[in-house]
Length: 508
Image (cartoon, rainbow, N blue to C red; front, side, top):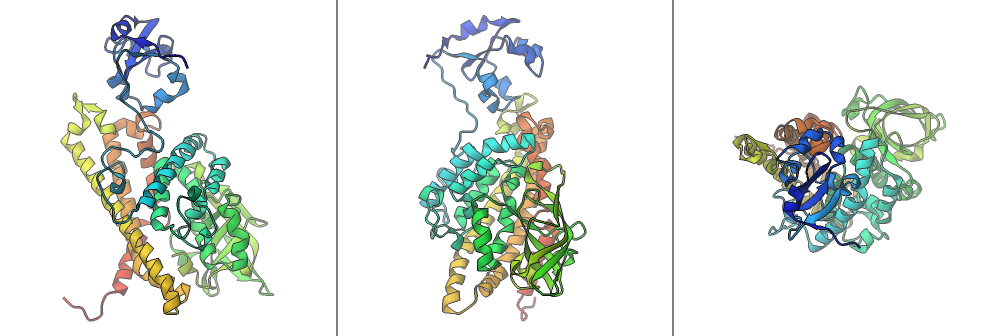
């Protein structure tokens, strides 16, 4: 490998004019003589007396993200380094834990402890982050740019590590599988391992891409796993968890939204009683454009029934264009006299309602860092408080899930409860809590997105450059408030569950 050219700052200062233009960025020397005319801001910016032949580190990072320097077309402009100096700045390092305060959950931050996460969780997290940073993140950027669905190669690499199976949480579906190259045994895998995967998804991929990377499976496959017949599971689950076939949850309708009891899609039995005949439509269905299976909520004579429908005659899907992202495969789906075996019913007929249950240190204002402004510090304090409160509530509920499941599974043996009854008991304790958390977290997300745009200014509404992730989050976060149940609907669910548990003999 050729040695890197050593250059003095005095030498750089000599190259400060049109046709002969060098600059220093973080102790690295760049020859931008030919590039200057291609600069988006024009050549005059680079010929400025404070930039030409000078250390432009502060000016560069005030306008650009570090990743710009990593792109091949700009990396090749580097001709050497400053004698006796070393680069100190870096961008995103694949697999590394950020040292920026509050950029990570406290259990990952140096000096903090956790009652929930073990050493195995930490090792697992390290491997998961490395995978998502090196495999998922580059594909997320590429697919958001071209609007296509996530690459099949990424889906297959996830399958090799059984990430698709782990996204379903702990359970029998993990038995016999090698998880993350053996880092965790199937019987050790708990909801905190699942939480790690979920949060790394959010961190390393863009919002729409994250849903496109089989978000429909996460909500569409559990009804099959928990309520499908053994024959149905044996036929469907292996191919889905292998990333060979795809599934989505089809509940929402144009006129019903989150109101599952107001659905208009119908399922009636054939004369011989062997098939369901389904008619209706579904809207805003994640992964619907490329799904092979649809977990469909239908109105039946007995109420609300969930049925697994395979793509075939009578099933049509159409892409819905949203400001959100085309990578998610959001679809409008129609069912026209679709015939489905009665054996594809998930759970009891009429029982479907139960089945479905760093920038502030770089930007300057009035000659001072942005964080020197009191109003900005106030916004940062609010953002940190919201993030920390959501994370701690999330960890607490995850802890309850881990321990309640163990207790409930034991109850199926010692008390004789059926698995369905055990899940009902768990739902009575946690459904309201989860509803409140989802409502609260999406409300916090939207408020934080607004604050972030104010902090970034015009860059916060620009789809490229310094504020690209802020713009993306601000544009897509409203969908989180709707997907899986609108904020007000879920908040009302939590309150109604609390009222049902109110002691009858309590008075003020």
